[in-house]
Structures are given as C-alpha cells and as structure tokens.
Length: 127
Image (cartoon, rainbow, N blue to C red; front, side, top):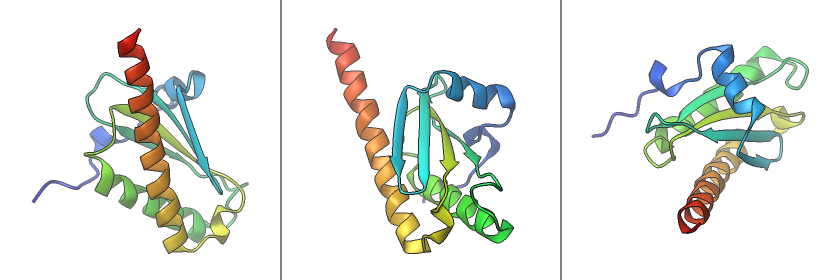
C-alpha cells in the first residue's frame, strides 16, 4: 500500500511559496467556482496551497469543507501530478456545489493540469 498522507513537504507553507506561483503562473486551469494556478518546481513532487477567502465563501463550515475536499483529492492524486507548485483559489459560488460535484470538478482540474504540463514539456523538448 502506498503512502497517501499529506505531509508538510506537499504543502506551500509561507508567503514566498505562494508569491512564487502568483507572480508567474505558467498553468491556469479553472472550473465553476475554482481556479488553479501552477508553476513548475525542481522538487520532484507537487506542492499545494489553498486560498479560500471569507469574501468568496462566507460560512466557515463551507470553507473548511472545501479545503478538506481539495486536500483529499490531492492526497489520492499526488503520485500522478507533475512536479509543480499549485495554488487552488476558491471563487464565488463554490459553496453552492455539493460534494460529488466538487469531486468531479477537482478530478477534471487535475487531469487538465497534467495534460497542460505534458503538452508544454513536449513543446519545450522539441524546440
């Protein structure tokens, strides 16, 4: 059985880590209520940070639910994701989505992110 935890090494921990992604996000993928920004890193594994503001998701219970679902989704896909730093931004309306819909959207976001990274790696290696 593989390790599917969410240790500190898989998280963006400080403002500098977030700024690294926000300043020059190479990849942008979005779904209803969620925006994912990503930038390649040299660590060999993905790292994830969450931005869920009170302005966009009013109730604390909804913010915590969203964060829990995103972390769970990342835990199960961490071995498939490329070596990128990822920031997941919650947008307005995400709290209206139910759990199965959020799971489907997150699964699609990770697949599209993998596809974009592979596509850009192929372009970079061919030039």
